[in-house]
Image 1 (cartoon, rainbow, N blue to C red):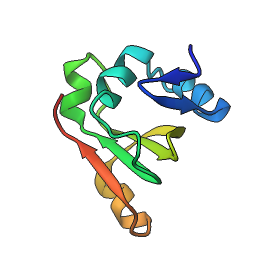
Image 2 (spheres, one colour):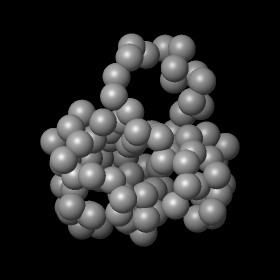
Image 3 (spheres, rainbow, N blue to C red):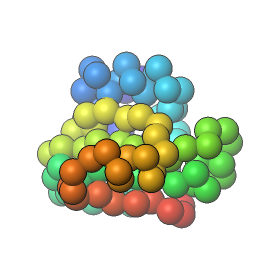
Image 4 (cartoon, rainbow, N blue to C red):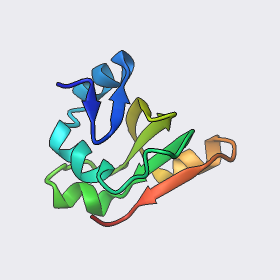
Length: 97
C-alpha cells in the first residue's frame, strides 16, 4: 500500500486500520477522487449504498477522518449510533459515486 492516495497522505495508523478493516486502495481512490484536498478536519461518511456498489458487504457506513490532507483513521459504524455519541463537527457524506 502506498503512503499517498488521491492527493492525501496516509498516517501509519490509517494504513494499519485500512488493512485491518479490508479497505483497499481502489475503494479509497473512488471515494477520494472528488473530495477537495483543502478540506481540513473533515469526517467523510461513505454510505452503505456506495460500499455495496464496490462489493463491500458491510451493513454500516465507512467513516474516514481527514486532517490537513492527511488520512488519520477509518472505521465502520452505524450512522445513527455515531450521531448520538459524538459532539458536533464538520463532516461530508459521500452518498453516490
